Image (tube, rainbow, N blue to C red; front, top):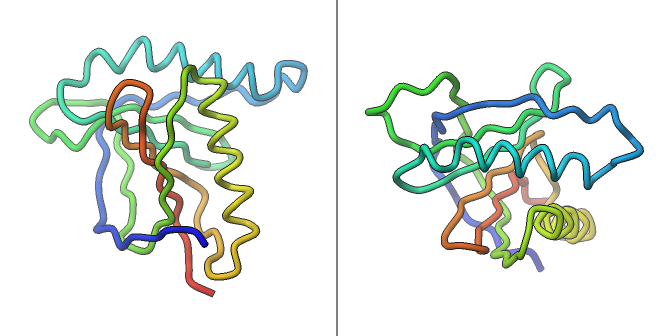
Length: 141
């Protein structure tokens, strides 16, 4: 059974990138490499908690790196609505492994009999080096 939590709405302020998903030869590894480059560029600019939002926006796969800090000007923001979220505590060594673990979480969620996936985004809350909590919006069945 998937663990769930009620979350309040949250705005993440940061830097957004559109991921190139057209190169099917590279597949998941190519997307993971793009994410890794974006984290290397922007994560060092975050002084507080680090959040990443993966979202489908206007048909594009987007990747926002940021935090909740309102005191610093950031070029982009995403509003995550209040609601029920499934959550998974993940440990990983690199971005490819993390993306595989996230895919496994989606698979586990799709097989769960108590909730169904809702929305076209997820939230990664980085809690330590190599550790994060993944939040996926769900609705109870």
